Structures are given as structure tokens and as C-alpha cells.
Length: 140
Image 1: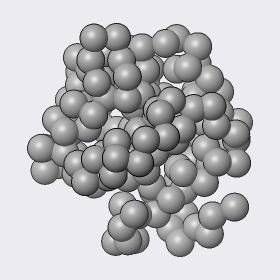
Image 2 (image 1 turned 120 degrees about the horizontal axis):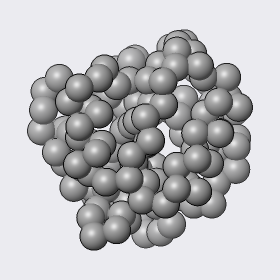
Image 3 (image 1 turned 30 degrees about the horizontal axis):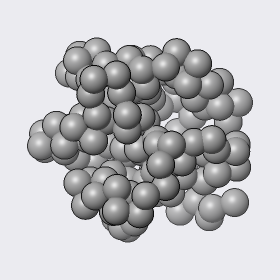
Image 4 (image 1 turned 60 degrees about the vertical axis):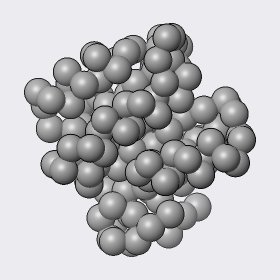
């Protein structure tokens, strides 16, 4: 398990962007099983996710790479263009383990990535690493 340098508050607000309902609900379940108690906003499009981000304080973003007719990497770019959103941990979720895509996501500001399917330990470790990176000044 990853070593936590900065404690993650249990009541943080997660934003999940995935076009598949089963994946959104699966991530929500994993987050709850890890003990997080804050709000979890489930969205299926970039416009929905942007609406949440623009209207509520969000502490952590999980975004699928391949969305119906859209790419999560485009949401990542849009988020990182706004200074007040640059410090939000942003984890890309993908079915592809293509190193060039992972490097592109990191270059564009992804805090970490998770390859589907994941196990609970890996999911938790990636969340810890992303949170720690944004709250301790480290980099991926």
C-alpha cells in the first residue's frame, strides 16, 4: 500500500466522469468502501462534468478516457486551463495501457491513471498518490 504523506479528508467531494453507468456506480462503490463520506457527483459527459465543476467545490476528479463521442483527455485539458482547478487531483481511467497515452495524460496534467479493470488496492493506491502529489508538492 502507498505511504501517505498527507492525510486525505474523508469528506472530500469526488467528481466521476464516465459514460457507462456501471463504471460510475462501481467507482462510487469503491470510494464508499474506502471510507469516503463526502459528495460524489456522477456525470456521463464533459458538459455535465463541467457544470458540476463550475458550480460546486470539487476536491478530486476521476475521468474515463474514452467517452461516447468525447475524450476524457479533452476534459483534462479544459480543467487544467483554469488556474483555480489546477490543484485538483485528476485521475484518468482507461482500458488501454498504452505508455504514450499515459505519458500524454501526465504531460497535460493528469495526477495519475488507472487501467481497467482494477483491484481495490490499486484503486486506493492511485487515489493516495494523486492526492499526495497535489498536496505535498511532489510530482508523478
